[in-house]
Length: 282
Image (cartoon, rainbow, N blue to C red; front, side):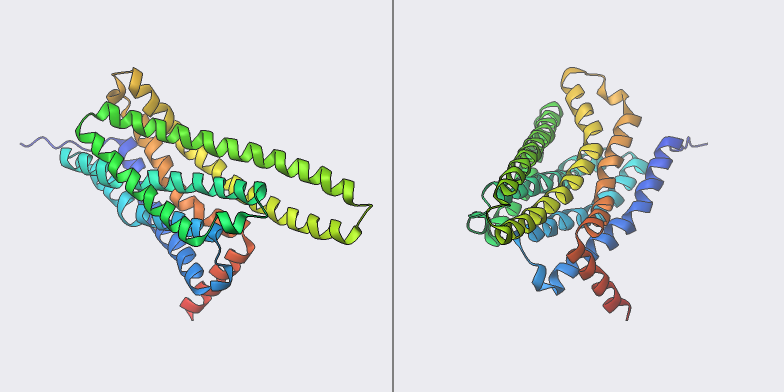
């Protein structure tokens, strides 16, 4: 009789979780992209960045998660190579785009008078293309050394977390300083105070919205970052199979959570998504 090795219960649970998240990621991110395409009035560099994030998250739902499930169930060596070099870099794209979003919000507050000159749609598109190229060129290190490749991933995640954290700390400081300045001017010019306060509240709300996306990213990527870092100093990393599986699933889950965060926090995008969904259903 042939020996048939059944998948471990933890692997089955992991695969079920990813399978359930696939339609959520596909439908959610597809609606975001269709809403952005059909609503030119909300087009802006900030929205374009979210659109770039929705593209990478959509690819996660269409390609990465199904391939991950197939890899876990078959445990084929070739599928592991394809996963590390073709599928997994898409998650790196999502991470870098979220980091770009935090930098965008920092520039909007710090250089609010020159923001429209510094950040344009063409520059956002160029940055997104560079992010995709960087992740896939980095994956070539896998064929040289898995250790070096995982170390590059760990440095990439750590750098993104540091940059995003720095941006949001600076955003908090800028908002506090602006509040003090505006209150000091309140008695001098009441109408100017109201206009400045309204603009500052809009920028503050936008920063908070992107901060929540960043917070979700930290929660989802931190376990993987720890494992990748430990790999650089621990040669027994392959024994931590369950830890790697759940850390990877948490990263992939981020692509299903992001569309809900957009719709929850960004009113104009939520209204565009609802309108698009109604048009499709009717």
